[in-house]
Image 1: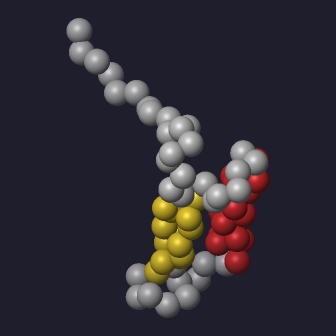
Image 2: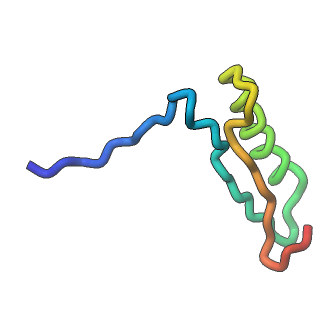
Length: 66
């Protein structure tokens, strides 16, 4: 019988590194395309009542400009 992969959880107190999320923006993006997802990731820490951020979000683009 073949094992299926399962998701693992890092809930121990020693694993406090935020997860890196790269948000790729594109020419013609409107503010809500960017602000909406950023708000979701920022709210994740508040919902979990954690002092350290759960996610580290970086905005990137093809040519490095915003």
